[in-house]
Amino acid sequence: MSLDTAGKRLDVVASQCADNVSTAAATWQAAAMETARAFAAAGLERAEAVAHTIDGDSFSPIQPGLFDRRAHFAHAALQAAKDDASAAQCDRLAALRLSADLVVKTPRLRLVLVPHK
Image (cartoon, rainbow, N blue to C red; front, side, top):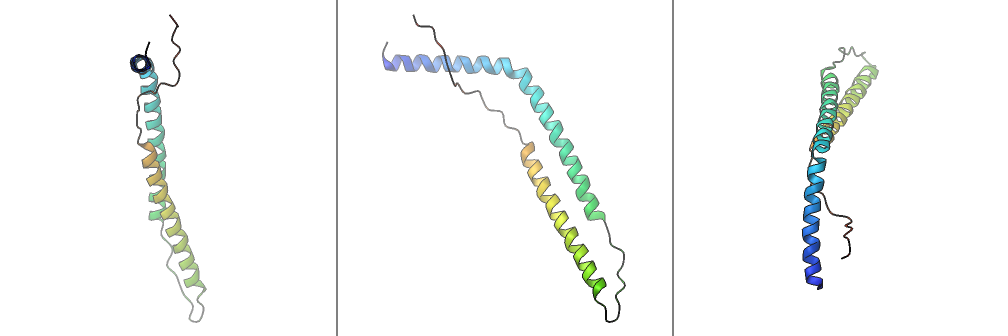
């Protein structure tokens, strides 16, 4: 058998194996994708609730002293912490949305054992 013929035969075997693996794994793959989507949806729902809570929090009005700027500094520090938490939640939501995008690829042949004739 020539090298060219062996290569073509290997391509046919690889295609058949990939089809067999895809068929055999279809049920498992569907269940795994459903579980991953449910997990991602729960994470997104939780992160959105946290972001909503952070954005909905309000501070009590400040009552500054005439020569005392501590109330202003405390208010500014709280606002900065809120802004940082809000930005972190936005980043988390973006990362969760990216991780929720599932891509199914065809199986790739790694090893073929062919009986020798």
